[in-house]
Every structure is written in C-alpha cells, then in structure tokens.
Length: 235
Image (cartoon, rainbow, N blue to C red; front, side, top):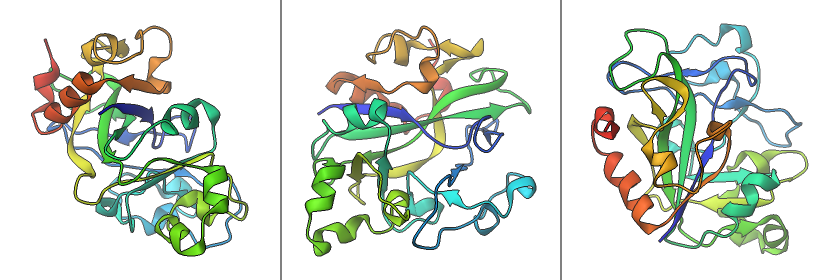
C-alpha cells in the first residue's frame, strides 16, 4: 500500500481566494474555475452550496475536480492533464491511496495548531477502486467501461485532455470533516513533520504545490490522523 498527496482546490491564483479553515478544524472545499470549453453542462460557483463569499465569481463555471459526493458530486473521481501530477498518479494501483491537500485561509480566531493567515491541509482521500487509468487507456476503453468516469470534469470538457483518471472506492473514500495540517503553526510555508519525515518531499521551497509520495507507514499515519483532532499532528 502506498499513496500520493496532491494540491487541489481554490487558491490565490484560481479564482483569486482560498477556501476557509475554521477554528474547530472544519473547512469548505471550494473547487477551481473551469478554464476550458465543456461539451457537457458544469455547475457555476452560484450553483454550489457554499458559505464562502463567491459573489465576485458567481457566474463562473467550476472545474469540480476532485469530485466528492459529499460536496455534490456523483462519484469519487479525479483527473489531471499535467505531467507533474499525472506521472506519480499513473503508478497507483487498486488499493493504494490518493490524498488531496489544499491551501486554506485561517484568518479568524486561529487555534494553536494552525498557522496565521493560511496553511496547507489534507482535506480528503480516495482509496483506488481500480488501477489508475492513463489518458491513452481511457481512449481505448469500451463505452460501458468509460461510464464510471462520465461525471469527471475532464471527461465533460469539449476535448478530453486528462493524462490520468482515478476512481475512488465509494466505501473507503471521503471528504474529511476536519483537516490534517501539513503546515507548522508558525506559518503556511513551514512544512511540518508529515511532510519532512513521512513523505518524499524535503519541505523546502514551494512544497505546498508539489505532489508528495508516502510509503505504507506514511500512508497509515495520514489515515490515522484523518480521524483525530487537528491538534494531534503537533509535536
């Protein structure tokens, strides 16, 4: 068993703000905007049930990827067209894990375990229901086999462009109720021990944008912390 963690969700570039992390560790998953034409209808920010103020982008279409049923999706799917993420994801097999982390704002009533202003936090995971599917494999699949990915944002684009597609087991995949911090309480850019000791990343430079690999032990650590108070990450 192994896993990869990748950065997802709204940020200061797309659409210009981050989702919130609340003092109790709760958060809101805000997807990035859709940047390409779509063949199938996709929701706008106004269509999503969000507490975050999205009035400035309300009519923008959303790239709802990763797709979580807890947030209104049909299945647990994820696709990516960028080689830096698609490479490590394409190596994952059925039973492996894909963790999703996001940079979230922590501007109000910051608890002791959270960094001021913003930080990086794990917000959910998929346990793969099948081996990751490359873009080439998807194109050669029969229509019936493709159907499980029909709700994915890359499949809805006018031109399918994903280099990899991942399907999560519905019984072992979820959007978390509370976050797992990856940033130290000293600042969002300061990587904690989950990054520097458990992942493949050094925690130097813009680590919060990079894919991170975890071995079996690191994967089990993340899974354990997903069900604990965010303050349990602190050492």
